[in-house]
Length: 404
Image 1 (tube, helix red, strand yellow):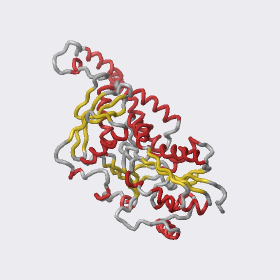
Image 2 (cartoon, rainbow, N blue to C red):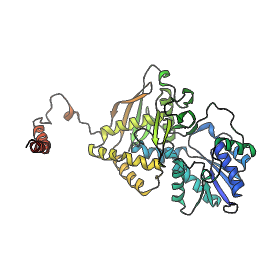
Image 3 (cartoon, rainbow, N blue to C red):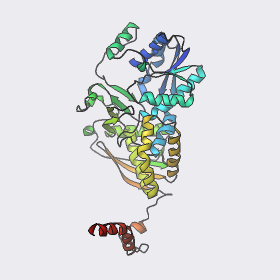
């Protein structure tokens, strides 16, 4: 069935790699439409070099590169970190949290360009297709979405390379880094190739953001991070913008081999997959945030928020950033952060980071007069007897019943 005439103009989320380069050409060939390429600068650095040139050479009528670094960290990463959201107890959601912002900007470009379709390079096996498309439909319920991996018959690496050669698209010849990776200011991820064997250790030369912990400095380094309403605002007394602050923590964490994770995760579509991640700055940030919370958050408020972390993390992992349940939960989380004001001191050493000090000049709930092991005049220890007996009453009654 011919697809030509179905679409006049499509905006493609374009990375400049082999897959999206092939998709760009495929859209032009199969749909006969104009294709506008869009790349989001989320902190991937040199990966964006020559993107406009590549896109134009492959057939794009225009190419946008949008610097979204500050918006990414301020409006997506920081709200997520107020919740201490970690998927399945391990994954800091670096790829997941980037997708709703990419979808948002892509839809803005589609509106400005008068495009009638959007497209992405996510496969039909993964999570990203869900994340992108839930975002698209949030902004335009009637938008046409083209997902080539669900349509074409290019179902192998060999088929992709043959298509690329046929259409003059440069094919990478180096096999040094055969795995797939995704990078932004929060992390870099690796999947595929040798990592598809869950027993095989990831090769050391794969890592980009961090040194091996064994080769990290032999002297610990201390870093102080200041928080206001749950968001970090300064490192070692220096006020920094959101993107600058996360970049600084990435530098410090990478130097000390912090933030490497190797895990088997459960994809939304149902399969397990192996991913290796580097999140140096995020790992420090979560530890420091917990440190300030520990001295400023009410116990029951903290326990309630913590009970919601798995659900919140699933919402982000599965692509529901723009869903009403995530927004409602965010409102609760943000309310818990009003008192999270203070400084955490974190010790960095050979792949580990841990809080070794915390303080808050305005919101500390720690009162040494009550907590001291020395003599005090504010706490009657004898009161604990009645407290214990009342809390033990149901256990005592149950025990009596069992003995009868």
